Each structure stands twice: as structure tokens, then as C-alpha cells.
Image (cartoon, rainbow, N blue to C red):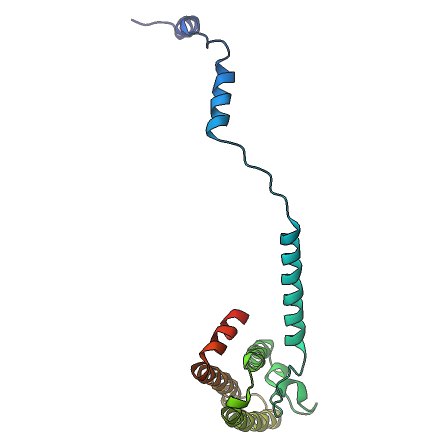
Length: 192
């Protein structure tokens, strides 16, 4: 029963039938009918104009956000920019502490820029600003203490906690303003 495999392959080639004439052409026609080719998309002038408007809006928002005074008058809350040269900050001691301080300061400034000041909310806004100013004074005192005594864990933790308190205070203010004016909350959510 042993057979030569070469002989089997020769016999197999001879036994195959050839494809019918124009079989491949008919197959491709059916394939094209079943799966039509996708049209190439071209950009219309409306899509280009919308892209330009989005880019201009983002650049204007970035410009307004990066300005030191974004229209809200706050009493000396920007500590990182207004410190005298002799007082050291967390960033003067460690790059890691500088990142933490910069993160909280950027978050505080971002929250301040999101809050809309209206005559109806003036009293609540002023109360929160007084609390922020008290925390700012405490932060300056802690920074002076850090300069005098050097780096120690208690002072560093107190400075970071101060920044956290300020940020939480601003979150609370934004939440209360949203509760007072629900339509303003949709404006804040759309601007994010």
C-alpha cells in the first residue's frame, strides 16, 4: 500500500478542473455590487470655517487664562507671583515640592477664573474672598517661617494644607453659586 508521494501529486494536478471562463470577472462584479466603494471625503468650506472658529476660541481662552489679572479683582491671592525675593517657597527647596505648589496654585487660579462675579452673588463672593485672604496671610507667614527655620515636615505640611484649603474653599463657592443659579452651572460645564 505504499505509494510514492510524487506520483500522487502529479495525479492530483491532472485531476483538478480548470475554472470556467470569465469566472474571476463575474466574481469581482458581484463583489463590487455587494460592497460599494466608499466615496472620498472632501472638506467643505463649512468644516474649515468651524475648525478655524474652534482654534480661535481655544487660543482666546488660553490668552485670557494666562493673563495675570483675568477680570476678577482679588486681594493679593496670587502668592507665587507677588512674593518678595527674600522669602523662600516650597519650590526653592525641592523640584517635587515645586510641582505640588505649582499644581495647587494653577488649580486655584483656574477655579477663580471660572467663577462668575454677579451683583446677586457679591455678598457670598466677598465672604469667600475674606476667607481666602486670611489663608493667603497665613501662607505668607508660613513661608516666612520656612525661610527662617529651613525645611521641616510640619511647615511643609502646613503650607500644602493651606493650599488644599484654598482650593476646597473655591470648590465650595462654585458649588454654592451653581445651586443659586442653575443656568450658570451649565455655562461652567460647557466651558470645561
